Image 1 (cartoon, chains in turn cyan, brown):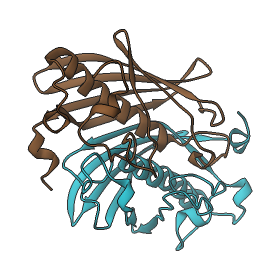
Image 2 (tube, one colour):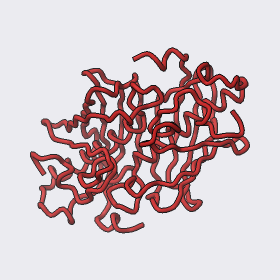
Image 3 (cartoon, one colour):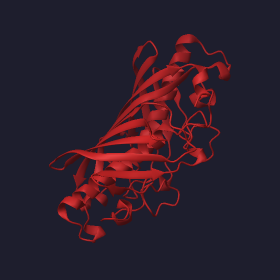
Image 4 (cartoon, chains in turn green, blue):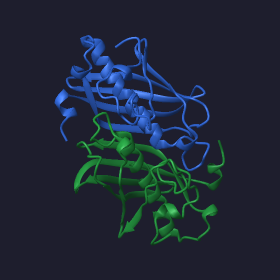
Amino acid sequence: MEPGAFQDDIAEQHCWGCGVLNEHGLQIKSYWSGDEAVCTWQPKAHHMAGPTHVLNGGIIATIIDCHSICTAIAAAHRAEGWTGNADASIWYVTASLQVTYLKPTPIREPVMLRARVKETKGKKTIVTCSLFAKEEECARGEVVAVRVPPAWRQSS
Amino acid sequence: MEPGAFQDDIAEQHCWGCGVLNEHGLQIKSYWSGDEAVCTWQPKAHHMAGPTHVLNGGIIATIIDCHSICTAIAAAHRAEGWTGNADASIWYVTASLQVTYLKPTPIREPVMLRARVKETKGKKTIVTCSLFAKEEECARGEVVAVRVPPAWRQSS
């Protein structure tokens, strides 16, 4: 799974936040930088909050969620070895998402996400993730990711 | 502000999640039903999670955030009286957002949000919000909304 983007190798690639095949989606890309997972992403003008110069809080929640889940998947692949078989690959879902908005995030510049695995215990991985704009931390999140079997992806 | 949709009367109408003027956005609409604020919304197919039949968790976070913030604004208008002057109207921002994902949310049917003001203390309003699909609760959120002055909307 290294050194390409996490999203190029995961099994389901249609996700609105991070799927490489979702042409209407945000298509974020996440990479390892040592033990940190990083993502740089340029918002579009229509991803605004009420005030048009501020990035929407739901978009911030979405990219923190996707980047963190992909980090949990990538960390598990790192720990267990990547087989190259996307269909059999490891899958995590979000059990909970918490985001603290520290200051308005400007929409015109790229934002950077920095995530780390805080804890891994059985099927559960907790990932912390901060969003920076012009090197200022604007939002901080925590995602509880839970590993599910491949069959989960087909069930309704 | 009653009985129309909250979003028809708030000051900033470009928000990606709930702005009536954002043609690329989700354009949710929220209404009072007694002391509960309700919103019914039909996801589009591209709002999918990894599995294509499941609604994206970031989209869920977005609509919970927007519906809850608009509920805080509408509750303040209810308490203080609505002047009809959108430019002078009350404005809240998200300080924090927490979402627990209870089960996968199907993407094909409309979802329903039900929110209530849990607590109001000074500038802070806490709103709880659940998301239902086919009358099953699939996600549950809590938003801490903070009132800001009109000038906040112009500052960067």
